[in-house]
Structure formats: C-alpha cells, structure tokens
Image 1 (cartoon, one colour):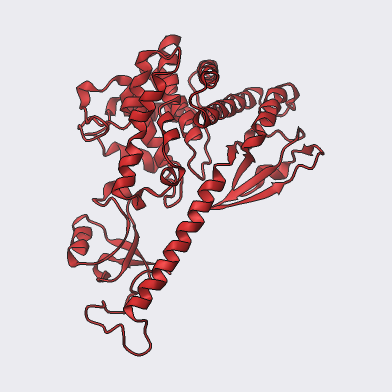
Image 2 (cartoon, rainbow, N blue to C red):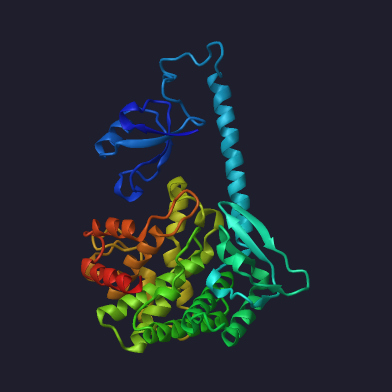
Amino acid sequence: MRKRIQVKELKIGMFVDGFEKSWISTPFIKHHFIIKEHKQINKIENAGIQYVYIDTDKGLDIGVESNRSLNLESKGSFAYEERQSVLETLAINKVTVFEGYVKEKDNYLQIDQNSLIEGSFIDFSIYLKNDMQINEYIKYENLEIEITEALKHVKGEILIRKEDMVKYKKYLGNILYHIPPHLSYQQIKSAIIKENAKIAVSELLENPEKNERVEECKTAVEEIIADIINNKGVLTHLLTINKYDYYTYTHSVNTCIYSIGLAMDIGIRDVRDLFTIGIGTLLHDIGKSTIPSEILNKPVDRLSEFEVNILKQHVKEGFKLIKMFKGIPEESYYPLLQHHEKLSGTGYPFGIREGQIHIYGKITALVNLYDTFTTSRPGFKAVTPFEALSVIRTLKEDYDMDIFKHFITLLGKSN
C-alpha cells in the first residue's frame, strides 16, 4: 500500500516510493529504495523535502519498528528471510509484467485521434492502451470500419499494429480529399504531416541502414517547415499534446517541430538553415535504435549505473549512423551530439561548456528537456507545461535563458 508521510516519520526498514517534489530538484538519482541507514533520512531532510511516499508492501509501515529493534521472528510475524522471499517474488512478477509490456508495445504505432476523421473508413484494427494494458478496440474483419464520434472520446492512447502502417499511410494520403466542411483543412493537414513524420522516424528506427527511410525523413522536415511558415510560427496543430507514454518517434517529431519554431522565433529564417536544424533534431535520438527496449522504457530512477551508461551511448551511436546518411548537412550533427550537453559542463557525452555548444545544440537541449518533462512513461507522470517551464527556469547554469525566453513566447503563440 502506498502512503504519504512526513519525512520525520521515516524509519530504517521503510521503502521510499517517491518524493512529493520534482525528481530533478532532489539530490537523488533513484526515488524508489529501502531505508537502510539514518544518513539516508538525513539526506532527504537536508534536501528540504517535507513529505515522501512509502510502499508498505515492500517495507515497514508507520507504527512498526525497524527490524534492528524488533524481533521479526516473533509469533504472528514473518521471519525476515520469508518476508524477503515474498518481496523478491513480487519484484520478479512486476519485472516480468513490465518486460512483456515493452515487447508488446514495440509491435504498435501510436496515432493521433485528430487524424481519424469522423465519417471516413479504415481497413485496419484499432487498439487502446491504458497504463501497461493494450486491448483491441475495433477489429477489422475484411469489412471497412467507419470512424465515429465515439472514437474521439475514448480513454487512453490509440494504437495500430506496425504491420498496418502501410494501410494507415494510404488512409492519410486520401483523407485530405474527403474533409467535412465543419472541420479545419489546415488542422487536418498539419495532423497528417505530423503523422507521416512519426511513421518516417519509426521506420528509420527499425531499419536505420536504409537510405530511403532517410529520404522520407527529409521530406517530413520540409513539410513541417512549410506548415510552420504557413501558420506564421504557430505549432498548435503539429504537436502531440495528450501524451500518455513515451515513444522515441513521437518525441523526435515534437523536438523537431519545437526546434524549428524556436529557431524561427529567434530570427533564423533561411529555409536551408531551418532544414539543417530540423533534420538534426528529427534524427537526434536515432542512436536509440541500438539500445535495448527494456532499458529505453525502464523508469529512469530504476536504471542501474550500468544501464545508465548504456543509455548514454545513444549519442555516440547516433553520430555513427548519421554520418552514413547521404545529404545530411554537417551542422545537423550538433543537435544530435549536443542535446544532452549543459552550459555548466556537467552534461554528456563530452562535458563541453557554454562557449563550445552550438546554438543548434542549445536549442535542442532545451526543447528535448521540455518534451521529456511533459511526456509520461512508466514510473513518471508528465508534468504540465507550466510546471516544466518552472523547473527549467531554475536551471540557469545549464540552459540558455535567452533561448528560454523565446521558447516561452513560442508556446504562448501556440496555445
């Protein structure tokens, strides 16, 4: 059972299951751990944290003494070894469920509800995802399915199987000619551009050695630039707003859209320069194609040091890949190489400082962090845009505040 308690109530033997404070503003890498010694409690208190959550199924509850002063072998209680065995079994079962979910999730593509037009027809099945459960919602049985208003109000994320992406692309190519009068042509067009970009990145992540996938990504960037220019820098219809879970392809497209819009707001208007930062940001996480899904989808605070080091390799692995792609400007390497660098020199993979970071790198680092904060994933609930900006505002040593001000302006125009 998960409980909220005051830090002063913490005892050795309790299992901490999160803080009532943003993880980035605490000195802890992990927010889920057993209290083994008093200095852990002191560290929490010194961080100014007043409340924590404990899991009484994994550790002691309030009112139960630590096993250092309580005989766990006493009548009516578990022996310590038996309790540990139960906890280990629960942990193994939880890991098994998570690993099964990750493998299953890789078989699907998350799609935007706005791309499914009421009154149109599809020839593929629709699935819904809630938490770590994926269930069939509408089954295609050789009879076209009509999209109804009900689909717009379902709870959860809409998915299709990746094997149906060709059918979905065909559907996207046809619906512009069948938009009802009461719907916005520009809004639907923007949704289609975004969906095609997501498909292009998803297919490239699956087959990063295929150059035709790169060409599709270039086309996607050109269409995004044209759409932003036509909408006078407003990004509203291009972005995926209701993000229940993290997908590398959706994050890549959002980062690309934000970065192009931000570059324009700063004063970068040459289409060639916009393409350079656009393709660089769209491909900034291409190196994640080399990282196991179990690590990519694992809650950050539960990654081992070894797994964190593997995850960090996505930058250098991505650089190896992008150098093989034809027609990618060299300045496009900056978003990929520097999206985890910080002005203070505490970023990775090179630990370079403010004067060494290219403006494309500064833009991408800021946007990457914002989109990460506002996207949920297992073990992390997305924060609101306001909360994300509030946290980033405090990170003056790490992120360019002049660019940050332009980003706030951009988001204001797009709301």
